[in-house]
Length: 161
Image 1 (tube, rainbow, N blue to C red):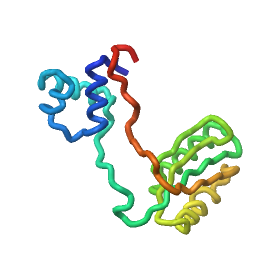
Image 2: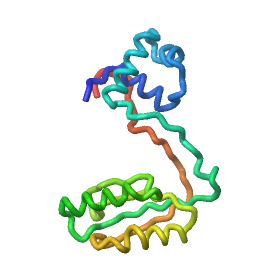
Image 3: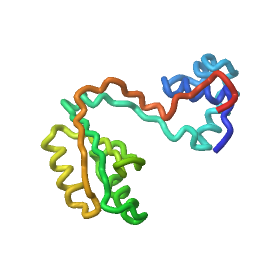
Image 4: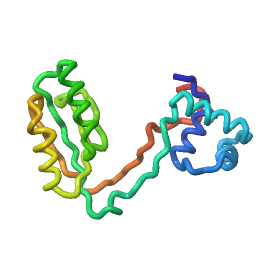
């Protein structure tokens, strides 16, 4: 991974808020010249510090949606079982996020479905039939209070991480 200085961190913080800025506007906000800004952004992309650019779509644009947070415990956590579960979650379009975690669960997964009936079908097809799943604890999201898809909160005040 590359070293990130204060200017790199300012660029990242600004792009996390609005990645549609022109290079000219980004340079103005960060306080560097446009050529310097362009070189730095290219460097950050080439180094995969910036992994991609996406459009965030309001889930309600497709009608009512249900978000479910499921904690999954595997029967045993051997490497092949864990890797198999990861692959299975990657193949499920309902799964928008999947985390291998510490604690009483092995995985936390975020699932987007139309309704609880669709979640039941997901449970049946993706989890109940998996012989390595020991238990599932599901929580239905009632209200999204905060959603900030920034990879991290970028501190811009110093040259130290």
